[in-house]
Length: 411
Image (cartoon, rainbow, N blue to C red):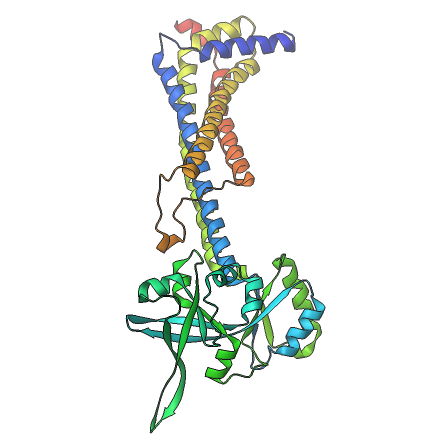
């Protein structure tokens, strides 16, 4: 037979086997269940990967805002100073630098208190690199006092304070009183509030001015605890700045960190969880593939006489193998296509309607984020196709090895 005629013959038999068979309805039902199992596996994988990616993206966005693209910190005292800032600003004019002080404090009001991290910053410079801080200045009462605070909205909610109220801060550095010491205390005016989207951050971070920090803790105005750096391309700029710092021996006592390094273990754990989830959910498609195998084997067993007649009339083993291989592939591909459509619909529903509500205190967002990347989508489809193709091989080989003499003798 010519190749074209062979294809016509194979396609006709496949169409015939895909139709509902009144004599063997269970085989048709089994094929439908196999198809639906593949579809369910693909759909669940798409939704799971979309949710994992969306969650990771949301956390990255919020942590990026609060951790700054790059942070320069000293290894020894006096290593981060005005001279270093001046040199870096000259060498990298496209970057924005905001020097800061930092210390741990305890806040005390008439309604309780809590522990926090207090940053001493230049408000104008900090606003240029910190979107959350910049937005907080919009609701500022514009206090002229240097002892003003920018605190998280959560702090105001829990302490029942409002803008313009005073909040007492206790510093770890003590003052000598009589024969002992007691923590340094200072009352600050709440000038404005911020909301980062992560309530745990809002509870523990506060900002005040350089002048207040220098006065209360008697800090040198030319030496800082670190520098926050804004960069549009942090991963490239960290290499450039490190190369510059290494070229000047007197700057060996500083270390540059990217925002991703400060949260490396967290994102590594999320990535590992995502990979494990992908492999586990891929087992759903593997189970569906076993259903395809069993369905095709039942078809082979019920069609043994027909296979024998086809071989007697000139059909080759390759053609028989091709028929059942394509039959399994078609069932699998329809399942993959259906699963993709259902997965896309499911993602649209989750992003459009508030079906699942999340606790903002825990996650920092209330709506379930879904963001399926092209790479994950391609991996899901390729994985499903490979499993379906492999599952079609054995039944096809089994059908092609049918001995027409044995079958027809027993009929």
